[in-house]
Each structure stands twice: as C-alpha cells, then as structure tokens.
Image (cartoon, rainbow, N blue to C red; front, side, top):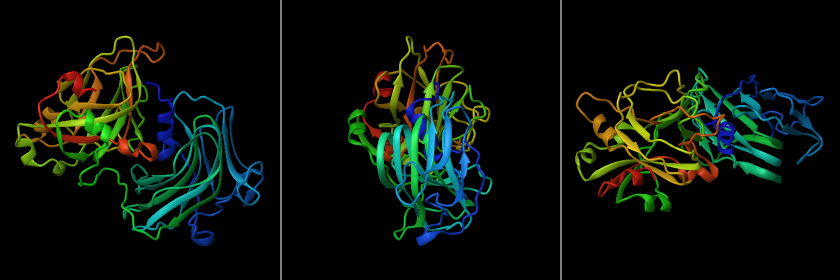
Length: 407
C-alpha cells in the first residue's frame, strides 16, 4: 500500500511529525494570542518572521507569505504544491510557542482558503521533552478541493502537564494551494479533556448505528483503543503512531497495524463469561482489492510497544495466528473477532499488550498494482472521521462466521 491516498495525506497534516522544523520563540501575541505574527504581516520579502517552513523541498513546491489573497491586513501564509511525492508529505508553516500553558485548554483558529487542495488544515500539537511522543493534539476541519476564506477552529484540548513544547502547524498535504491568515492560539474559557497518546479514557465508547447493525449479537460494551500504530516494511524507520490513519496491506513486504486497549478496560468477569466475544471494529475508508487477496491474521503481541513504533522496532508477537479472517472488498466497518487474544492475555503470568493484524502472505507488489488492503481510521480520527475510531466490542451472542467477523 503506497500511502499517497487522500486519507494518508490528511493524517500527516493532522497530527504527525514526519517533517523537521526550526523552533521559533513566541511568548505571546495580540489579544491573548499565544502566537506571534499570526497574520504574516511581519517579515522580509516573501518570508514571514517567527514562522518556519517545515517542508520537503521539491520542484513545484512554493511556501511564502503573499499579498495575492488575504483575509485581513496585507499578507497571508501561502503554500502551493504540484509535485507528487513518493510517500505522504505535509508541507506546513510551523511555530513553537515558548511559554507552555500546562493544564490549560487551548484552541487554535485560522482563516483558511484553498484551491484544488488535497487537504488543508491547521493543527496544534503537544510534545514531550524528547519530541518523540505527541501527548495531545487537535485539528481544525480539513478542507479539500476549493474553499473561499472560512474561519475554522479546533476543539479545546488540555495541555498535559508533561508537555515540553506546543507547536501550531498550518498545513497543505499533497497537492494544491492553500492560504492561511489570522492564525491564533488562545487559552479557552471552558475546560477540555486532553486527547492523550498511550492512554485512553476508560469510559465506554459510543457505538455508531451502522456498527451496531454490523455486529452479530448484543453489544454489552465498547472499549476505546488506548494506542494504535501502523508499520510499513518499505518504510522501515517510519514511526508515527499518532496519525489519523492505519493500514493493513499485503504489498512490498507488508503493512501491519497494532492495537492495544487499557488492561483494566476488560474486566476479569467479562473474560470468564463464555457467551461473550471480543471483537475489534475498524473502519476502512478506502479498500483496495487485488485479484487474489489472501487471509488477514490476528496475532497476540507479547511485548510492550510505544505508539510511535516502526517496522524495525515492532514488538515480538506470537509465532502462530490466534485467528484468521477473509478479506472483504467493501468500504465499511471491518470486524475482527480477537476473543482468543483477549483470553490468552488473561492467562496466568500473561500480560496484555494487544493484537497485531497482518496479511498471512505479504508478497504482492505496489508497482504491479496487484495488492489488497484496508486504509482505516485510527484512534486519532478527527472531523468527519471522529465517529469512526476503532473500538473493542464486547458482544453477547453466537459466534459469527469468519466472513462475518471480517466484514
């Protein structure tokens, strides 16, 4: 699976850190704005002050401040790209604030204009001291295609106490043009819960109506996923678990996904009930079906793993699959019965590290276009995908067929 599709591009714009950036100090701004130069009014030539261009240089890429289209004042931030990268890239204007408002809810806002854009948005990211783990994030809605100036804001997100840096990014993912103006980061009046990495709320997750219909049996409870990530054999060092997309594919050595839920989220009493099944529900927003897709297998993970895990650092998993599922071509919810994994984790001396999904054979070719796979929403899904995040369903009822499980 070559991650040049729209959803993979969106994911990086929303919450990944594939691009390097130069930190810029910003203590505060006008009218409570924690950012400096939010309208690109200050700068030299076509380069705005304080902001850094986080980009992958290429012919066809332009990043500048411009007078061609503005919401207010004389300038705006501009990104234009006609280059098609081999892997998903989000070019963005970035600013790191110096004074981190730990424990406070913050909101990023901006006016956004787009022209034939794959994806354009503004996001805020909270990072730990090492800059390896994203502790919290939020994004504006993502705009695709053409859009006249529109004001967009993120939901309030609380800055975790462990946050060492807060970065705001105005991003164009993929091709097209995007303008950003009056970008701000402010402290929200209302409190907000942090969207954390590595830990999920223990409260019951909401079950969308279409998922409830797809499940075979009565849903007793829906457990949110605590962490998830995708690893790719052809990008072996790529380690970005805090993205809004995941994948399972059988091309170029394989694309695999890892999932874990909080151990205490599954009660011992639930595991002892033989009439309960544990089903991992994932939404495929783009499904690619090759000429002969093979089986998808679920493996018990045997070692702990950080959410930013790569192919090279993927954890040890059981030598044999705990379950096998048919590949189903449609774009919809995919249900994987991982009861065997959940029960194995509850065995004496065992620990709960989650499950890995992969194809049994990973020998197809992206170049030959004979591969199959799901491109799915992760637990960081936002905007239109927020209601499609993965969940572990605890279901009461008869065991479904393999095909129904993988539907």
